[in-house]
Length: 334
Image (tube, rainbow, N blue to C red; front, side):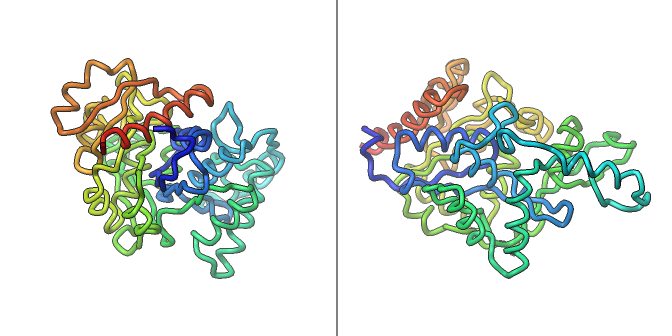
């Protein structure tokens, strides 16, 4: 299939840096106007009174070629004067106050996005409308869609004796991921508010010509999207049009805590473990060359398995991976 000339409508389930890089590669080989990114908002948070949507902003900044390439988040040529100035107030903060937190960095340019999002939320705009406006401000042609307009919060239950000896302490995902550098064992993960959350773009998902599950953490990036009412049922019905990309390469996550979380929550940290999690909703799994020996086991689950380079270390590799993902579905449906 010539993806460059394709008129397919494509929906990408997305969360984090891996998804952002995949979407950037997809933009090189497929019309951005025919691409919808359904993005995780389970790790959204409120700090300094500001509404922050890390995964959405990472996707938008990456597609706008404004992302900091070293960190993989935030804006390039960033400054940190506001964060530095917070130290003045941290010294006078009462012991029971959470004002002026310093563990979550917000760059001076990045603050403008959070200022805008928070102001629009206070005016009554929903998450999808606000995301449309922010995307337009960055001249993004893809449709970037928050997974829901309702508040869903990923909460991590820590294993025993991780922090101050507390058993079963529950903290927000950003505290786990940033404050504790995801270096504490996890007992469980839950999505608070998921029962009352309505998925966005469910009709687009159902009618898409192709659906790609990006190489994102299956538990905390893709998991919240799947947990929304109707999403897994929809994916199951269109399974032949769904391809997933394993975020686990050689037993390890390229970035983030996916490998440790999989093990801690009873899954196998391997491309085969990912296949078991996705086999009911995806007909095809793309894995990295180093995991080629797992192909027969993955295919025994009733999935088609494609082996290629999945480590998106440069734009041309991201583009090649996107091309492979689209072609795999076209070939599968012949």
